[in-house]
Image: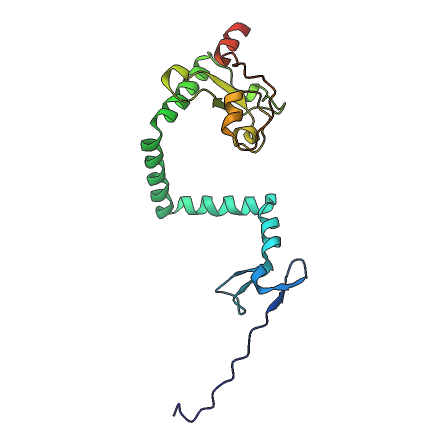
Length: 188
């Protein structure tokens, strides 16, 4: 039966495709692969998808997906495993972070949100610029999220600058900053 049926001529797939977002015809290599699509490629080109991924809307969608996943039993299990690995791998960081939280609660350090980062934005985090050893637990500086994550390199503290790629600010001439906890005690 199968011998009698004519063979279907397979048509060659087109080497180009029009992007559904920017409406530009591009080669297939400019599109990510997709098993769901009839053509085997995504409808938007890589550059349009990359640009969309940077938009606030895409980040909200990603966060919603992450939150949904973390509410599932598997998500909670994975999160617990990751948390235990982090605790095992960086116990000194956890202890240092807890020491700062206790100092803030006791009033020995002001809340980071009441201070300004060196770039001028409102600070939201403390950074252990001398490391996480016990003697440096309260040697912290206030940083905004961009400076703390290394997306902005305006920090005048040399040890912070040396840890970031492409930082050539040089605001300080190598002088070591005063301990932030001592500055707080002087202000009170």
